[in-house]
Figure 1 (tube, one colour):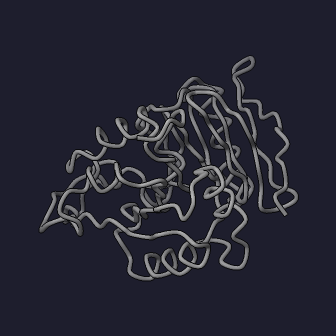
Figure 2: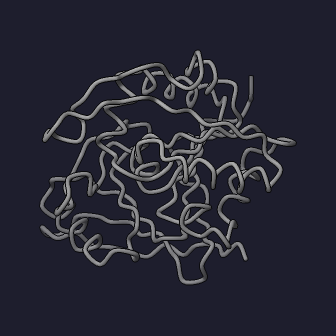
Figure 3: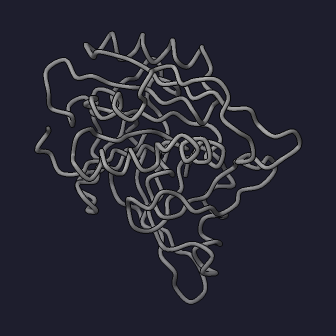
Length: 252
């Protein structure tokens, strides 16, 4: 068993799926794992396990020297229902998903529909498995967008088309989170409004190309694959949400 503290790398955006010609964040993630030829499992649940994303993951991380695998969790969505409504169908792509994830050095969660993803994980019992893995320091948990929101108590999501809405997440990390802070024009005003009126807890936002490294519950490092990318502490002040820039260490 690893002796690392519980570790999460939360990316606002970037990595192989958004910056295929700029893998600085993915290289950083492997450096955080700090083992020779790390084993990395990709969870593409939020995007409904698309073959294209899976292929890109294997190509990118295999090219960086990692041992790669992925985990698919078959799910039938409810017709005209909410994103989280549906049921498991068939069998996962590995016989024992929890054991497979517990054997990894890195678990990488892709972007997509956060609400749907968490519902699928809960149906398969992976929410509990991931918490045990995190608490034991067995693997570095990481991801972007949905794969970034999920680790916090709360987040801002576009899981329901046409609106940015608040949601509860896994709660491994305290506070709330918003990805794509500079990448989507509506993200910042929505997050500031929701924190300002008390709907969401104060928290951290991350620009595309920015990653937040947490050891236990403490933010230990802020890095970026883009020179201008930064993190933002968002607090409540007089009924408003206020964003304060936290500079990122450029990895290039």
